[in-house]
Every structure is written in C-alpha cells, then in structure tokens.
Length: 310
View 1 (tube, rainbow, N blue to C red):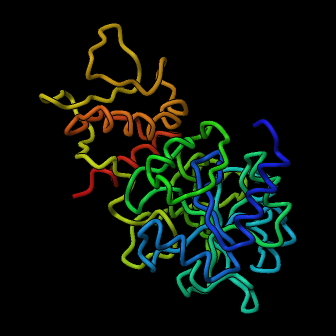
View 2: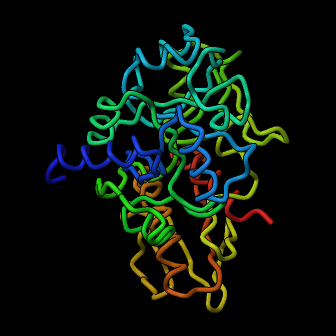
View 3: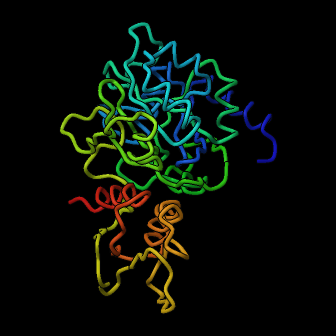
C-alpha cells in the first residue's frame, strides 16, 4: 500500500457522502458503507441484490464504539481478547438507542459485529465517526472476492473506489458465533469450535442451517462460481475441471491444486480464487475431491456444500 493518508482521505470522502466503496480484509473484500445511514445501507443491498432478510456484518475499529451499539457479555470479552482483531464475527444483542440502521440487522434486535485485522481498513475505521456495514463484495449467492480485481469483475463501474490491499490472506469469510445465549457457531471460518472451546471452556454447538436467517452466511445456496459443483468426486468427467487438495506428480491440464503439500490453511486461502479461475477458463462444471473435515477443512466443506446446493 503506497500512501495510506491519501487513500483513507479519499475513502472517507466517499463514505461521508453515503457512497459505497470496497475494502480489503484478511478474510475477503467487503462492500462498505456507513452503518448508521439508511441511505448507504440500502445501496449495499441493492448493489448485491441481497435479500432484505439477510443481515449485514458491521465492522468496528474502536471497542468503545461497539459498546454504544451492543450489550457486552463475558463470553464476548474472552473471545475479543484472544481473537480480535481477526477473522471472527459475533452476534450480540443490539441496544435500543443504537444508531445502527434498522436495515443492517433486518429489523432484528441482534447485530453481527467484527474487528477486521487488515491494517489499512483498521486505520480507516479509526478515522470514521461510524462503523462500516460491509458484507462480502460480491453479488448475492456468488463467490466472495479475495482481490481488488475480483471486485471489479463483480461490479465493474458500479463501484467507483476500491481500496487495493492485495490478496486476502485467509480467503474465507469469518467464523460467526452467536453469543446472545449459549455460544453457537452459525458459520465456519478460520477459527474453529475447538479454538472457541479452548477459551470459553464450554461445549460449542453449531447451527449452520436454519429456516429463519439470523446471521449472514446461513443461506443454503451460496459461494457459487456460476457453474455446477460436485463434491467428494473420485474421477473427472469430460469438459470438467478437477480440484485436488495437493499437487501430484501426474499433472493434467484440467487439474487444479489447492496446496503444494496438502495444507488445509493454504487450500482455504486458494479456494475462491481457484473456483473463479476455473469459471473464467470456460469450464462447464467442477469436480472436487474429498476434503478432510478437520481444521480449515470444515469451513472448506461448508462452502463447497453450499456452492453445490441444488
């Protein structure tokens, strides 16, 4: 990043005028607007063609600012101390006098909040008088972007300003944990239930699928590259791309590898960019070999399952 000062100054100008920009985070790129502004938040939903019942995540820089909008509990304090800033989103009870736009939370009394780690985005947040509503910078149900060029591919000239922070290091959306009652994981990400259990010392339940959406990332069909995806594949069909976990000696033109040595963390960081690359190469479908359901593999399997939902 060349000049933080001039970039942040320009970003603030857009955001203060209720315009939408794209911001980098360590997870994926976000489509950001003033979370206190009904005008800005409505623009996000319109740009993404996002269902109005699907809440947005609000990004904070200052802990003090969060306390103005949400009720803080002990579980949150423990997890915040360990993982923030970082790839974790919390569902908290929203205060009645919160300035957060009612459209952000889809009129619910809860709020999804997180503290992103990306340096330039944190600097921007610290220079704003409001937090940023920032879902992933993609059209609803499609692949999340992990580079500035991905955002351009999604929206073209509809987004006038993109902060280019390089490739997102994690490459998958944040883990979402509901802390309004007993802790529950609502979406898998880079922080696992094992990580959470280690800090909270309680069993962490999961509730990934629900008829009533209370958090982002709970849609059955999501993260789609725009072509059919089949999981746990043992072979590959004609005109189909084959995604393998690690690179083998026998390399073929339609084989795509997520990791050189089978690292699930590396595989997660390359998943979306690989799916996007395959689509852009003109393949008609994608087969993915079985991915171990452990560590980052749990989040990978969750994304692939939703991408392949029919």
